[in-house]
Length: 294
Image (tube, rainbow, N blue to C red; front, side):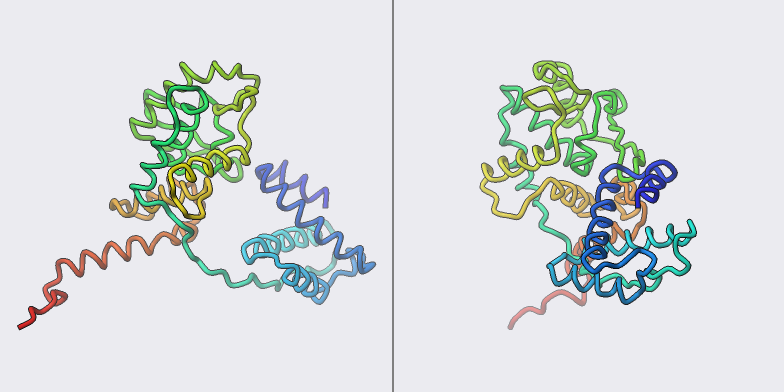
């Protein structure tokens, strides 16, 4: 197991968060095998089937289970390749069917209300406003936001350099409002945090904000805005993509801005285009006009 994780880190360059998830999955498998006195060499399809049944019984969500199965497939393929196993017991594991439902998104008015909440007259308020604006302007994952450094922002070009999943780099343009806020924050407010770490967004101690801290900031401002939806930092990313498509952006452009490796990951937002086309059709096709009542 350690050799596989080292292989993923060194040879494939996977991100720390991904490795942590894979490691947790392997620990789940290890505990399951130890409880049954089963050695790795004895694992077969039936063993893994019972492991999956156990995970479902304990309430593991569909998407988490799908990732867990991907971990098992990758690990056992590696074990066969290394000569530790003769046959791959995970070869025919099937993923659970997942509903592709778009989570709650914020309307444009709701987003504007949230962005107006932070107090720009003190360092924490200015940091929060800048952070929220940048998340929405660039469609950032919370891990990408926390990993930003001041040098990742280019005010002159109006872009931010983002390192996504698997440390893949992308350049995302940001609008002038966000550019002005980030410029002012880095120049006038970030030094007031007495930085001890190179992160762009800092806590009171001058250290980089954690994902949990960003989550709390979002929850606080959403509550103060009086919005009663299940909102998380990732909601800003969903809203970013949804609002772009509503404005007429094509799916391929949104894929590039989000940093999705596969267009299928972006297709969750296609309902937005379908709704917009339906409204256009209903408004302009002559056969959709309602007949006048006599």
